[in-house]
Length: 415
Image (tube, rainbow, N blue to C red):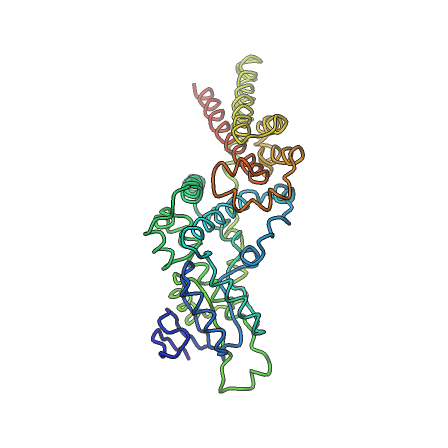
């Protein structure tokens, strides 16, 4: 049996708040749609939990985002070397950008984005209620976005993030109104989110499905299963932008919830053949070999030197623009020409690890990271974010060098 309502009784703590009620398999789910920058949403959440009508609380968070909301010093415990070695610098940079965007909103509006989610977890724990984190890990969402967009889409997305997240100006009224009606992650991507169906699918629709499956996985305690007349009450606190989609999937989805979560938890829906890396390696090696074979030592050496010059030179320029140590610049320059032979280890990782070794960020850098990353100057001033810039700009320089050198080698082949 499914029950759907958006007209609560006047004495209900949720009066005036968008919500829907779905009853299924002995569980009654009250889906409360909140605005992530609204004091009224915080009050509604605290009031609903305080009324004592619920047996459990679910929130639109994953473990990482919950830690960021509840533990301000969590970044100080980060192992930055591990982040670089595991190839998670891009994700770390995106999280820093999102945090900076949220801090700007908090300073402008006087309320921390996601405050109602934090209030829900605190109020539930105060009443001894179990708290269920139902959102997908943000890193998986970013990876699925990246896989869907392709190379040029990722470039456009990175530009949109840079403009939207690192700008110093105030957040516009229209953007704030959209945030009240939508999703925090979606609003962080700005206009690009509205123009990209692939981005919307990974950011909103997939997460609606994922959260619906996670809600269906909540187990009813054995002592409650025997009471057929009193359904197990779950309050789910989610952004208003998820309310309709989540309610639909919660009513209609028939697939096994555990299997559905596992499917949506995969970094990509299907592993793609790294055709660009294969083509690049073939072009570079084949072109240089052709130069030695057809044109002799002079031509082969010329092509080889062009490859080294452009990849090394532009990697060094990128690292220098990031304010890298001279030895970090040298490490990036040496690693860049070897890109086709180690596609899984970018040149920026080598320069960033050297930078970490020579200029180890202080404890104060970690504590100041959230504030420093709100401005471009702060990114350069802070030892942690400067390592991230080192990684990003070294890789950017290497990528540009690869394109230029590859094009010159190809033009020589067809000349």
